[in-house]
Image 1: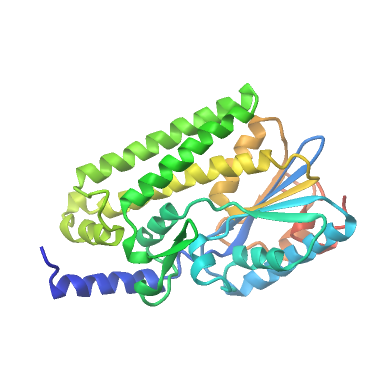
Image 2: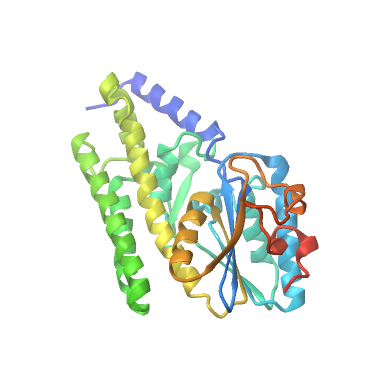
Length: 336
């Protein structure tokens, strides 16, 4: 059945809304935590995906100075960053993204003791999440927006739920193989998370069947169908349920692989993880379960961490009592 002009107009409005709403912009740090064992320290820096361009530069400057300080001290440090895939492909110089700013700095700076890796594994799933989430910061025209897969670029509008499904299968298979590298206690944690991600994937499949969404259907068209055809009161949440299933699937896979990346960096003195706070929270739980000591955290919820927040740290309950914030406040980076 051909699309009516009205349908095309509604699609244009939807794309415009996705393009210009600010709620999906990768943004600023709001949470800091430290875990430690007898060999290394792990700094978890969680960001909140909301635009605040005024604080991105100060936070970026502090992190950059701290990493330079680690290098000067000869401290062996590994940095893992969740670099938003579609910014990386389509807008790699976006200075509103702290994650991109830090990764670009590391990419263009020659270090002997500090190295980094991009922790983002989601390409199709991330693209689907961006389409489904109001506020994704994509370029003005959907035909100018691309995602990258196996070294090639594909247009935004070609993404389907089958792409999402194939990416799930790929990472599920890899995780199943990776877990064999670890002792039984850690394998059990991988098994627990694999059960969780399978359940999430099955929930997404059931949803697509219930709402008659073909796996070969464009995700953008599926969004339109969910918003146009299921607009009765009892079905109004269909669109939001779909995007939540995608978010859950992407987060589960990302969290498992981030855990593996951190476990694979045992030769480093310090590990710095910079991702969305939902991922650092999950990682914190896993680190605690395998024996890392929790040293404390500071959480400002949805407001940015400022240097004065860090200076004020003292021995009170709920405040960090260990001089751990060298990664976010350069004055403290002399601590080793």
